[in-house]
Length: 88
Image (cartoon, rainbow, N blue to C red; front, side, top):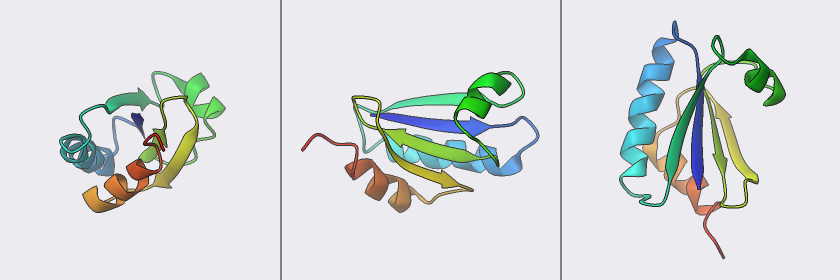
């Protein structure tokens, strides 16, 4: 499973989201966290249809998006969404 944070360098909420994802990842040993900075990679941000930062996207092992949220999620929200990415 992949947890993707789409962020921007001037975004204070992005720093809080990084912390939330790191905490959630403690309970998801197979999860990979990636971060995309909209200023450094605007093409990817556009392709992902990012409107605000932070945005969190969770994908399953096949790359299918199973969750997307704008703003700062809570650890329980991330963990609940991550269940959708687990193999059946």
